[in-house]
Amino acid sequence: MKIEHDAGGFAYLPGLRFAGNGVIASPGMVIEHAVLREPLPLPTALDRIRRYLGEAGRPLEALCGLELRLPAVLPMAEFRDFNEHYLAHLDRYALLRDGASPLARTNVAPSANPPEEPVIAAFSYTVFRETSQPPGLVITGVAELGEDATFPDGVVRRGETSVDALVHKASFVCEEISTRIKTLGATWEAADRTQLYCAHPAVFEISRKALGQSGVHPVMGFVWHDSTPPVLGLELEIDVQRYQRELIVEN
Image 1: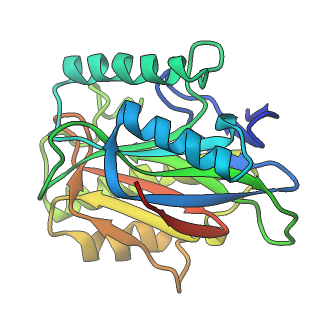
Image 2: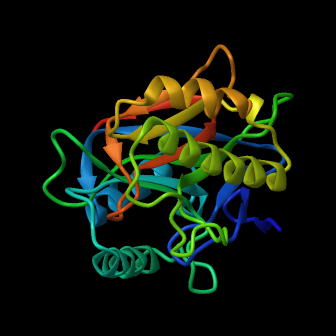
């Protein structure tokens, strides 16, 4: 069940230690989305975000989502090491709750022009604002990794990259995202942005046969990023957002 984060102005679904499964704005709050014009390394970015939120009259606890970019896909052992490094940075800024991160997170490796080190490219945060519209939300990026007994190692059709396999993977991911959105008390139809991270040329089929069946807004559509999930053996990731305003933040 979702947990209220009063100081942050949002509620979150607990997930793994390094990220909550998703967040939703509390009553009287909305979510805004900020893109760093130049992505910044973790400690530098968190300093910049703290200054930005301070200038906006918001505490750092209002930070509710981070979007990371990696230089390359990682073996699982290195991914675990990265997450410990990431959590240590969040802990220095008192952003953990009971030793885990409540923040939504997307973490992918771009296929072209990747950064030289892990960077933060964008972030989401809450501000006070009454609205009659559906509440803002951010769903953590979900890859084709689950606990389905059909896939003993947890990866849906590991090693397969045919159109059929990728659509199967995406449909699995969409079911998980739909569950998270419903648990938060929202609907996918109300989302402003659905983002697909995939380095395979099956985007149209994924759109029509997986995303199109899951409630993606017919006008908003989805955004495709030529990127890969952060762990070797995973082929795609999807996240969902609803925010009231998007800004570009100068460094």
